[in-house]
Length: 462
Image (cartoon, rainbow, N blue to C red; front, side, top):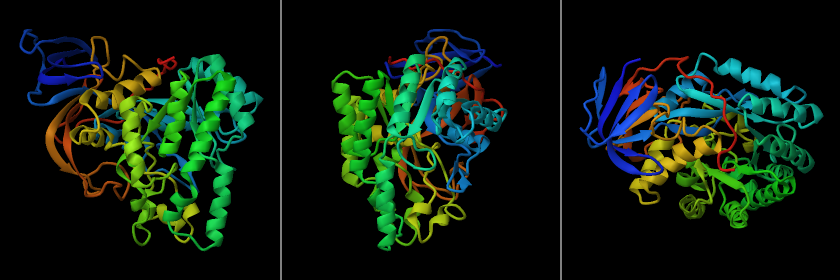
């Protein structure tokens, strides 16, 4: 592997900003030095003058090839990780799925088979537990020993992924015993199903009704209940895709008590709203995801939560379904629209736009997108920072370049963009993954199989 030097850039990590040259050898960062102070010889030199040098992004919530509603997410591990690399993300943590009636092991093996030899960037797995029973609970310590150190349960989707409070409590207790982190999709699924049935009976079938039945109060109620169950179990808790200010208030109250409770939000909740769900015709189906988009006035609370660290991570929940042939399964019945949005390619750029807009500092951008997810899921300091010994997952980022997001130019395997026509300032110029150049000045140089599976340690905030 070629010895590489990146010169003259502003190195931005969660901890500091400093102009420095970065030396890369054998896939790792070897040293940082004041610009021009070292006479490093390298086969490959990148001039990052006027640019940022930032850690590769860590997207801790993706769903490649995820089965849902009679179809499956349109991005494979090959196409999805390639798109992630185009957007400056060099590590994903995807969700392996347990099928009801089958062991956890079978689900994990299925996901290894999907990903192995196909990923352009490094990857790890969480485990979705959809069938809590004695055998499942007995399997959890073994998976933790293999580096799958987080387990996701659902308070939503009765009949599919749903677990009741007793099952969640048992899983939390076992996770706590093994040092694992419990992740929860916090929405009151049985109550939502009642509201769905009532809405359809009234003839309310358009996509906008998806957001109207999945009430913010039902996200807040489930978040409160999840926190109390975690307290009873003595377990840490990570609540995924927080979208409602009322749910965020529950997290903030728990953290004010010093509880090990963490939260994530996603770009769609920061930049999109129910206005998108209400777009004319069937266009709103493009924006159907769960938790749903909220009215625009929820966004200020989410931005504030990111600044105050009541929310620690921004992930994408990338789960794309094509508008034609997948989203339109729900024409005439919003409850049949596959839930999920494309986003893995745009997270770093959208969060940089938040820096430009004054919502975040540069270091907080890197904290939310790189360092915090790496620490949360046991990958730091190998991932999420730029320091001697860390993997050389490095992005040269042009903070002045202007681009327009569009399905015509994105690299995700989906026929629409949730951010069609949105102009953002900032663009990835060069991406290194473990020292290999994956992308350089608009030329993709990556390959399937470069990415390797990452066994993770337990949550580093505990």
